[in-house]
Amino acid sequence: MEKQTLVVFDFDGTITKKDTFVKFIRFVRDNFMFFRVVFVYLPLLVLLYSNQRIKQKLLSFFFREMNLNAFNKKCEYFCENFQHLIKPRAVYTKSSHRKIVEISIL
Image (cartoon, rainbow, N blue to C red; front, top):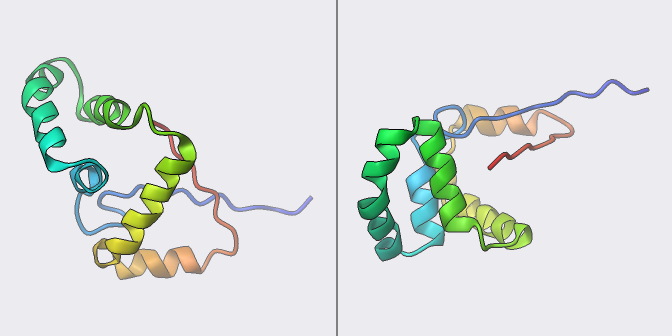
């Protein structure tokens, strides 16, 4: 059996120069929808949940009706348009691995 390496990247702060969570949602959905949802729901979410749980809830809200293929295409398009946010070292690290397995949990 061939020995395999599993490489897992955390985006915000590890691969990217800054947090991309809000930028990604605003890129895929319109600004009006984003700010309306944040204005209405965020105070309640902040009182009830941790930062990670708030992100999970918002991702679920904004993308629950989008199928996986469409979501993946939006992710790829986002990455193509925001290459300047990726740290040079992260690009080198990723390219130095022969096979990369990506795991995404929403």
